[in-house]
Amino acid sequence: MNLSIILRSINRRDEVSIITIIDSKKDRLINNGYNNYPFQLEELLYEHELVKSCVVGGITDEMVGGKPKAFVVLKPGATAILEEIKH
Image (cartoon, rainbow, N blue to C red):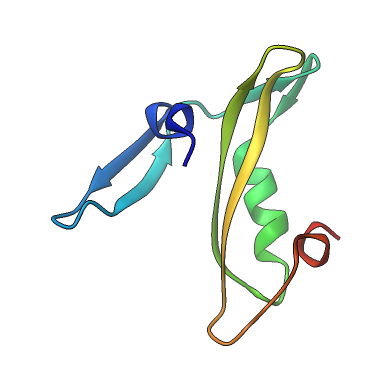
């Protein structure tokens, strides 16, 4: 996992070193001069029938600023490829 995502999130680590992302330190990403709000992207992902849970954070990109990065957990038994979730 990209360490910059962990550092910009509010997270906790359990006794077996599993990191759980609880919240974002920033509520807005600026990408190419546009405001992107992670919660809006999360709401879109939750509309997908295969998505059980998700979190959207930002990664630093020197060209565009902050780029959204989504982590998605599918429902039990579900399989999907990236293109299925993106559409």
